[in-house]
Length: 120
Image (cartoon, rainbow, N blue to C red; front, top):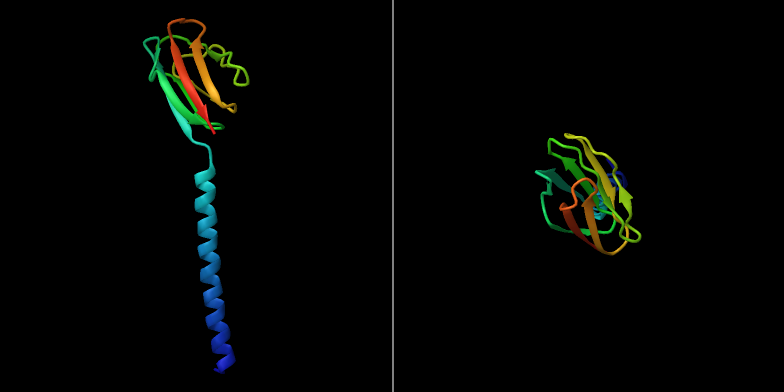
C-alpha cells in the first residue's frame, strides 16, 4: 500500500466521522425545535389542570376521560376554535399560534375553565 492510499483511507474515515457527527447534531436540533404535545384530561366536568403555559405552535390534546360529552372551545382573538361534541373516550388536538392568554371553556358545562398562556 502506498503512502497516498493510506492517507486517502484515513482522510475518508475522518470525513465519514465528521459527516455522521454533523448529521447527528442536525437531527438533535431538529427534534428540539419541534412543537410539544400537552395532554389535558376532561373528567367530572373539569379540566385536569386550571392553567397551562405553552409555546406558540405547541399542540394541546384534549382527552375526554369523562362519561359524558364535552364541547371545548375558545373565542380568544387569533386562537379561536371549537372542537364540537367530543364523545367519551375520544381525543382531539389544537395548536394555538398567537401569543397571549387564552380562556378555554366547555359549551355544555359552563364551570369548566382552562387558562392557557401562549408564549413565543
